[in-house]
Image (cartoon, rainbow, N blue to C red; front, side, top):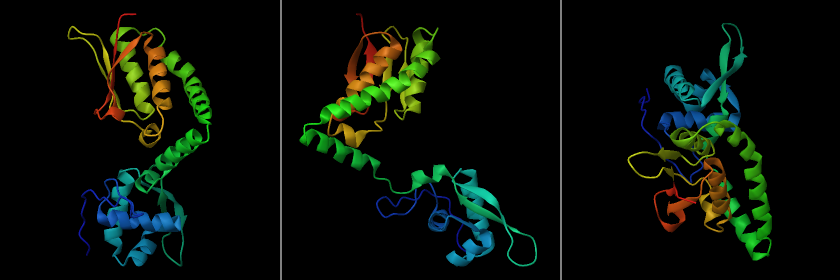
Length: 225
C-alpha cells in the first residue's frame, strides 16, 4: 500500500498540482483535472493504487476544499459509486500565467504609447469597488475604520494588517502584492491603490515602505493634512 503521506508538495513550473497536497493527493488531483470527474474505483485503477488508499487521499482533499462530490454513477450491479471532481478552489493548485501575461500587456501598452488605457482601466476598476467599500466603512472611525479597511484590502488580495495606538499615528501594512508582475512594468496600479486607501481612511497618507523598492510590505501611516 502507498504511504499515506500528508506533507506539503511543491511542483512549481512542472504542470503538477501542489499547494499543500501530498504526493499521493497530487496524483489524484492531476487525474481529476484531466478527466473532469471519476469514482474512487476508477481513480484506483488509473493510479494503480488500492481503493482504500485512494479513498484516504480523496477524503483529505475533500476536507481541504479541493475535491467535491458530484453525484453517483452506477456501473453494473451493486451500490452506485460516488463521483468526485475538483472544486473551483483547486484551480489555485495548478500553474497559472495571469501575472506574466498582465506584465507583458503592460509592457506592450507602454511600448505602443497606450499606457493611458491602463490608467483608465484601473480608475474604473477602483470606482467599481469604491461604493461598496465606503458603505462598509460608513459610521466607523479611528481604529475600527482602519481595521475594516484592512479587511477590505485583504479580500482584494493584499493581506493587509492594521496597526493603531501605542502613541503613534495608525499604520496600514499590505503584506502581499497580488499584481507583482504588472507593478514591475508600471506603477499605475500603485497609484490607484494609494488613492483607494486614502478615500477609505479619509486622511492624507505617508508611505513608509514599498514592495517594489525591496521592502517586505507596502506600509502607510496617516499624517496631518
